[in-house]
Each structure stands twice: as structure tokens, then as C-alpha cells.
Length: 138
Image 1 (cartoon, rainbow, N blue to C red):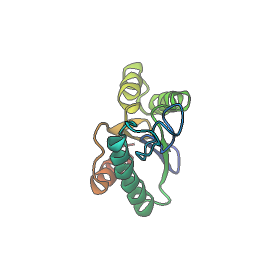
Image 2 (image 1 turned 60 degrees about the vertical axis):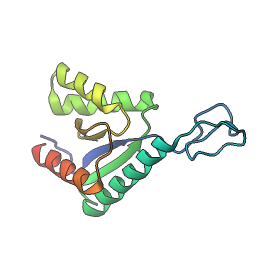
Image 3 (image 1 turned 180 degrees about the vertical axis):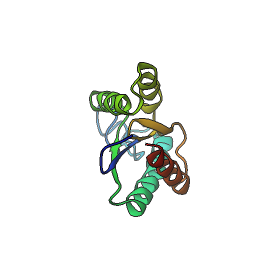
């Protein structure tokens, strides 16, 4: 059971930042000065869907949750944060390892160290239900 007054919710999605060597070669927004720049449309769709989830959570649960958005490429922050939260929640190595496996992927929603969704981002109402259920179970 969580002893914190606020529950930590991690939304794992790519940040809108340069992902290639130079701004001419592609950005998540699909821009690029040279022809054939990488198409980041799927990442952009995930970002927009996760943005709707963020807004819904912060509007519905403003004092109950600390919502943080983290890029899955930021492993130096994400892996220790997931491990720490999962250890507090699961208290077993197998549970921590499951959280690390599922919680580092794009589209993951993690509540106090428990992965409630991973993969395609659920709609905002579904995500709110998942978060509320995890908070109740904590």
C-alpha cells in the first residue's frame, strides 16, 4: 500500500525533439529540410494520444496524482525510477523485472510502480479508469 499522499503516474512517450543528427534530417513533427526525412507520424499520434491522457488525469485527479511524462529513450532516469517504484509496490524481484520489461516501452502507463497499460495508448477515459483502479488497489 502506498504511504504517499499523491500517487506517481508515469506516462511513457517520446518527446517532441530532434531524434536524428541534424534538424535537416527529421524531427518527430515530420519536418526536415532534405527530401526523404524520416516519417515520425506514428510517434506523433502516440504523443497526441498520451497528451489527452495527461490532460484527463490532471483535470480529474489534480490533488491525487503527480503525473510525469518520460521519454522511453531516457533510460538513465526511467529504469531507476521504475525499479524504485516497483520495489515499493511488488516487494519481489519478479514483479520488479516485469515492471522494467513492460514499463520501458512506448505507451506505458505506470501507477506507483505498477504497469496498468503498455503498447497502444488507451483513450483518455479508459486510462483514467485504469489509473483509478490502480490507486484503489495500492
